[in-house]
Length: 263
Image (cartoon, rainbow, N blue to C red; front, side, top):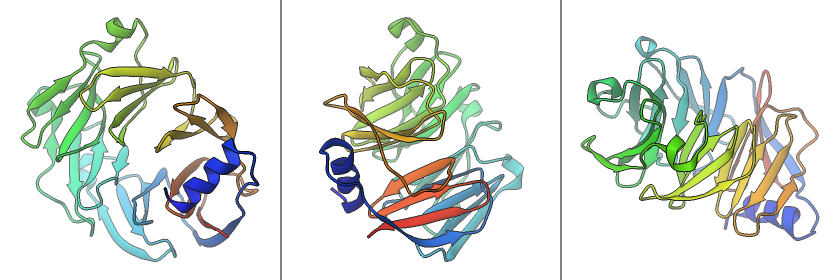
């Protein structure tokens, strides 16, 4: 378990002191959202542009494609095949670690998904989609053939489906449905449970702990096995997005990205 994640869990669940953070760098840029990879690189999205920085704030690479509109989601869990999702144009683009295009864009409407609302990477170079037309999760293999389908989740779970977040992590798939909570599936698309956290703004699963940001911009954690919910103490700054990776805490505010390390 990585150092910062371990300390955050100790602080949240074991009664030990919370970590002390040291500001490493400030990236002075406005952003729509921010994410990171497992090598502590920071990805900043603004409109149709994606910028990749290292943890010291050095700009490494840029990518943009004005023909596809704004970037709605970036999945950098595989840093050699970074997924970009353009919701309005129903396109998936893959980039390599230098943010160079890796093949041609995938037009989801051309393969039968005219209402794909969410997309994320999956193992074996496959991809998960949430298809609003059929209200189901589907997994496509490297050849874009459907190999997993959950069926209509609204009927299966007897809930209204309007999800806003999808990610595969540690052999689980997390689908955030704000009105009911975070739906959890296994890698075969079998429904596992609903985590009863409603109306959250940002979600990040890490091991057995899910970090999430509440409507009043507080960071909290939920332990999947124990179901404990705790507040997580943060640096005394305002933020509207966060990421936890390795020994780093990344916070986004209105006009900058703050990168902290644990002292």
